[in-house]
Length: 449
Image 1: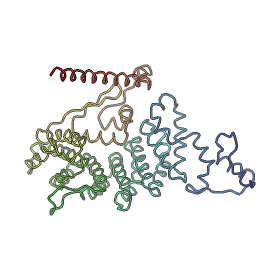
Image 2 (image 1 turned 90 degrees about the vertical axis):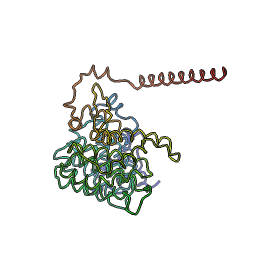
Image 3 (image 1 turned 90 degrees about the horizontal axis):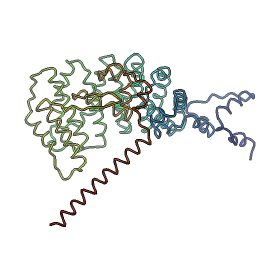
Image 4 (image 1 turned 45 degrees about the horizontal axis):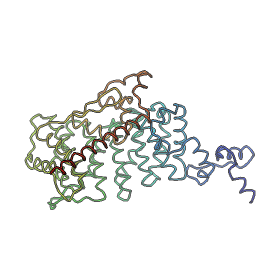
């Protein structure tokens, strides 16, 4: 084997070879100094990858989740892993960058790391910006998801405003780019809405974001010449995300702007109820219920001209028995539209209870429900933890300051993975036994007759 090949091979028994260490030793030995660019070929060497994977496996957060961080990891270990993931967002390999972004998103969704994020806010923003600009579909989606949780971590203020100023134009460009991936545009639309909801302090920027999202979802409106069902297209998922993000931002608009939007969309939005995509029908129905709630909040005697036609359409969706639709879709649709119909006809909302730790939150309005659903979509299983500890979310839902619990109380509240497994197994056995008894009774009745 040539000598230069042997020099580049990883050492046997080394802790992972360390490409960066090799570069340092070469420099100290008098070798020529090389400037390695973030996306250069040198940065993706096998030695560099093996060295990085020793302290920051990007997939570890997706596999282990927050429970492992609580039980096995210390704060120092967690921050050490996160620093490694941030470094890997500059890797040459697109898969490595995507995995690092997903690891960051999972970690920031499951923990509140305000100080850590605040210190590295500019570095994280630069990495997200680079991945949004140079990455492809999956990488852009991962980068947009990290941007959302980054703003949730920081809350409203100068830092989030700077993030929005940097990433806002890029997100808008991707959303409006017809050549970009639909999935990337969909995630960017959600991210744009969430970041603007948190960070914007400029009313003109808020109106500009609303207009951008309107230009997307209004393409699903029925045209005047169309009288039949609106057919779904590959762009429908993008239109749904844009509509939901637009509805979220409408909840923080001044009254005058809300009135303008109601006049513009109240008579066009019902056309989306005839779309053949169940998720679009549900998104349109929930948005209509929220618009009615806003309108009646401004004017208690608010009158909607086409109420008979609208309630007839909502009642049909609430009792839909179309055989051409999947049972799961029909069940989900009927459940949602029963609530929407009650909201439109009776001004009623079925209160929901969300439990997190020793606390409870009551969702008693469509505005609150839509806000909760949006942040739940971004944070996933970490939503409950953030409701307990994230001051920004606690302010949004008027929960007051975080409840301080001592270590003993936290330990009694916590269920280990093994105990949870035993509980689930026992519940499964009980359900199986109950079903078996029910079958036996039916069999006895059959024999009797």
